[in-house]
Amino acid sequence: MTATLPRREETRRPPAAPTAPRRRADRARALVGAAYAAPTALVVGLFFLVPLGLVAWMSLHRWPLLGKPRLNAPDNYTGIADDELLRTAAWFTVKYTVITTVLLFAVALGLALLVQHRRPGVGFFRTAFYLPMAVGFASASLLFLGLLSDEIGPVTDLLAWLGLVDGYVSWTGGSPDSALASAVLLVLWRFAGFAMLILLTGLQAIPTDVHEAARVDGATRWQAFRRITLPLMRPTIALVLTMITTGSLLAFDQFWILTRGGPDNSTTSVVMVVYREAFVRLDLGSAAGISVVLLVVLVVFNAVQLGVLRRRSS
Image (cartoon, rainbow, N blue to C red):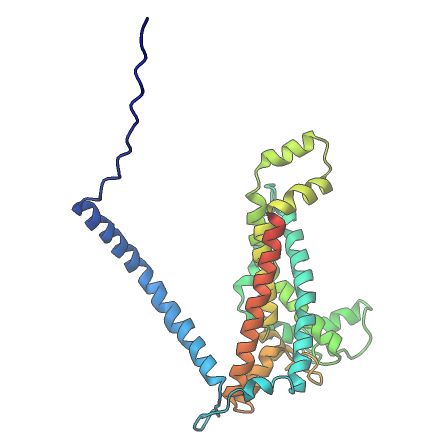
């Protein structure tokens, strides 16, 4: 008969303290990482944080373009609610953002699905769809201004030859609807290829085994797209929607060059109001106040948008 000996409790040894060479190596790695991050931190500080602080300080002053600033807080913020032009511009900017976001995302997603799979000639179409991004936005706006001109532009003559329009048509200044449509068409032509490229990256990141398993289970293309493709692409969709909405809320070039805010300020955006306050009325303090409010709205809107998309994804 054998007796079992009681188990000896294992004692846990405390982790050994790092040696001096190990500590020196850790400090060296930390210094190397800080050295790599220092240029980026310096650029962000000089060209983002410092100007942001200056704008916030300017918004608390009566700051003429040529003259001595004077503290008038919070008059620049309380006067925003009484600015009728700003209210009109805010409503137009929201309407333009909704229209542009829906159309641009739909066109970009359609193009991404069109060129998703490898087939003969698909590389040419991918390049052709992305090619307008090589043109600067101001240059693209001037190009559309020439094309849509009622004096030298070929669009009106071509549509008249096809029998679609009759006589004189002013695309950029005739009516608010035609001016808005011209700007939206310009944005679609310029940015659809860029959004397509981002969405195409998200589509190609989905494993092919998932779609093959769905086809084996008898899922239709629409069911696979709605139940598999869209849920797996939510992070990419969130990025694209955030970029589109932010760019639309900050719209300036297309309206300043194409329509000059007309007719009758019907296509004046919020950023155009900031420009007029600063360089037409020469009131930098009022322009800074509007800019700060616009920045807060953008941060809140993007945070809510990303939060909703992430919560649905989880």
